[in-house]
Length: 201
Image (cartoon, rainbow, N blue to C red; front, side, top):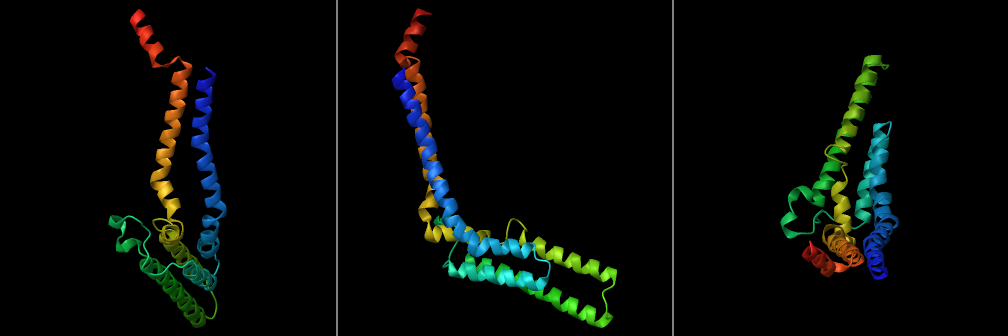
């Protein structure tokens, strides 16, 4: 009985401890680093109330990616058959550059329109807000626009975390479950007792 409880506790430790330790490390280490250099600027760009501020934040996002060592030839995948052009960092940079160019076009439109009209009629204000909303839409289209950099950063700097998340954690969880099941069986008297019970029936 006591031995079975011990195995169950060991199984729970196998399930919980690695997950908590690695998750905690990832949160205060690599994830914070990427959020600080990259994703926080994407969020600032999304909530920016002017195209100028949006461009500033998007440029800071690109600079953050470069500071993290994310060169255009890196992929947001580590398995050879997953490395396709749509998850290369050069596509990531081109995508952000395209949004910056669209934002510059909004600035040109705004300056030209306001200069021509001398003031900002309510209808023009509505069009301007719609254009800003369209820019924000590009930032979250099919997910946040910096998603390739997230995978590329972890693969380039913390590959073991990717391997843990994709493969190793499942082996550890299965091991923990197997130990817990073994403990439960032991508490019930083991398979031998189960066979004896069947014979008496």
